[in-house]
Structure formats: structure tokens, C-alpha cells
Amino acid sequence: SFSNANFSYFLQYITNKNRSLHTHSDMITTPGLMDKMRAEKFDVAFVESFHLCAPILFHHLGIDKFAVTESLSATDAWFHYTQTPSNPAYVPTLMVAPSGEKMSFIERVWNTISHLLMVIHNANTLRRFEPVFKEAKRDYPSLPEAIAKNSLVFMNSDPLLDFPAPRSSRIIDIGGISVSFGHSPLNQTWSSILSLRSQTILLSFGTFVQSHAMPIQYKRSIIEAFRKFPDVTFIWKYEKPEDRISEGVENVIESTWVPQHDMLNDPRLSVFITHGGQGSVTEANTAGVPLIVIPVVTDQIRNANQVKRNGLGIVVDKAELETPNALVKAIQDILNDTKSVSYVLNFLKISLINPNMFQSIFVRNMEFLAEFGPLRQLDHYGSQLNFIQYYLIDVFSFLIVISLLPLIIVTIVIR
Image (cartoon, rainbow, N blue to C red; front, side, top):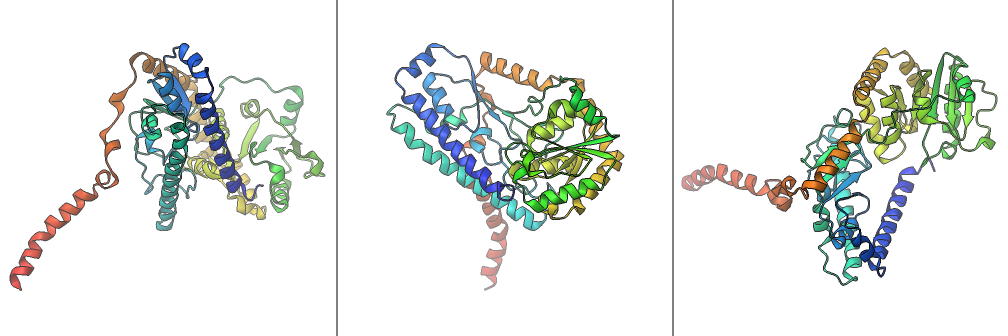
């Protein structure tokens, strides 16, 4: 449901991890399948980071040139893939993002705990997957070793939007690759709806957490907020019309489906109220539409803070939907805030300079990897250091002892 979405999201994440494990195990152990795939003589491969076992599959197929794609904007606990350290002191984590990069002491504590929990979870996941391949009785490297042999990591991140963070040379941002810059004009039905009033706002919470599942009080608050703006048409993607949630409210149009991409690119759309999913935020930004973000789960909170940080919209906490006040204020502010509109239009201009830039970056780098890879030149020795060495604990301990040594000697002599 809307209220326990974080738990549902994590449960689905674990379930899909297990499915991925069994899928790769079946592929490797199915008689003849690997021989058929090996006969294809693949030059290069890429895989979503979610599929942890794929590097073992590549090893078995003799593919030593491979890249990793990451559908989210951050992999703060996947050092095996990225060989890039995370710094929870100022980089918000993916799963429990705080208010943004400017964190209070308590927020830094929670951010660090979130990072450590993900590190532990990922390490346990790797250990749990290892026995599956040992049972195959073949000469496989360990899973961390196989994963570390990737040459490039393509991130679903836009460097102009994401929080600045330390990066290794293997990480390449392609955050706009999923956006189609072409769009179709709206059909007569939708076009007439957008022409009903001078301003139109779209509300959609995506597909994972649907509007009908939110608490009834949240729905009532949203409807009450919409009533405050009779001169604005609100299009609400709502999955159960039988609820009649907007019955009697003339300026609210319910629909179980909306042509989101085409609608965002229609100049008559004024604002997009969204859950803050990566795809929705990117689509809105490249279409030049200001945002009101009501994040529901995990990465959406991080995405919302990116929007706020870059002046591309307003963030409303989902708990604030208990009353209509916060949403009413957000709508008033976003409709009257020329600064946000200016920021969004400026980002749109940047996007239109080279609309196929991210696709081109991906293709060029994959072609380069196929011809000149594997790119072991991008590996750094830091990945071989243990925790004490990597964070210079041994060096700082030595320097502290050396600096205190004269004081210790003087104290001994005086006594």
C-alpha cells in the first residue's frame, strides 16, 4: 500500500534478486545452452547491476569485455562494481536519503547507517549466491572478483542534476538515455481537456505505488486542494474509477492511463505532480515542466531532493497530505514562481542542444570497449586495500604516535 511502500519495495527487491539468481543458475546448468551461446562469439556485453550473477556467465562464455548499467542514479554501496568510494558525510544514500547534501549531525548519522546497512546487505547477498556456482563444479572466480572485472559502469544519472560525488574514471553518466525526445501531438480528447482552462496540472504516482492505494485521508486532502483552484484543470491518473474519488469536482479529470510523455511535451501543461521516479523526473526536466514531487519510497526521496537542489520544483512530504495545506501552498508557489520556470526552461535548452547525446555516449563507449577492451587501465589500486589501509587509519595512527612521542619522552624524563 501507499503507507508501507518502503517495505513492499524492499520485499520486491529481494524477490527479484532471488529470481535473478535462479535464472543465471539455470542458464549455466542447462545442458548445451552455454555451448550454443559460446558459439555466437560475442565481442562485448553489458548487464544491469541488479543481475549480480551475470559476470560469472560472461566468464563461462569467455567474454572479458563487459560493462554494467545502473538504472538508478546512485550505487553508494556497490564498490565491487564502481570502484568508487562513497562519502555519506555529504552524498545522500540511495535507500534512506536525508534532506539532501546539507545534513545535520543526526541526518549524517542516519545516512551513514543506511550506507553501512547496504554494504552489509550486499556482502551477504554475494556470499549467499556463491554456493550456487560452486555446485556447478566448474572453475569459476569468486563473485566479487568476477564483478570487479567490468570495464565501464553506465549510470542513469545526469551530472547537471545529481549530487556531486567522487567518481572513478569507469563511471559514465547517461541519465537522459531513456527519454524519447520525439513526441506525438495529443489526440482530440486529451487536447480538448488541456484547452478547458488556462492552466493544467498532471498528477501521477507511477505504476509501483498507485493512487488508489493511498490512505483515504490523503485522497480527500488532494481533492480538497484541487477545489481551491477552480481555474486550473487537474488530470489525475487514478486506477479505480469505481471509487468516484473526484465525483462532483468539475476541474478534476480522472483517467486510468495518461499519455505522460506526450502530455509533458505539450506547452499547455503547467505543472507535473509526481512521486519522483527517475524516469518521470527526467522526462519532466527535458520537457521543461516544473515539478511538485511527493516521494513515496527509497530513491524517490533522493530524486526529490535533486529537484529541490536545482530549483526545478517543490517537494511535499507524503505525510503532509493528512491535510490539504501543504499541497495548496505548493501549487500556489509553483504557479507563481517564475524562478522555477526559468530554471526548468534553462535545463530544457541544455537538453535540446544535443538531444541524442547520451545515446551517442553509450554507443561510442561500448564500441571503444569492444575494440580496445578490457580496460584494465581504469582499475585503481585502492580496490586492493583493506579497510584500515584505504581510510589511512594506520597512517593517522602512526602520525599521532609520532607527534605524541616527544611529549611522552619529556614526561618520562621529568618523572
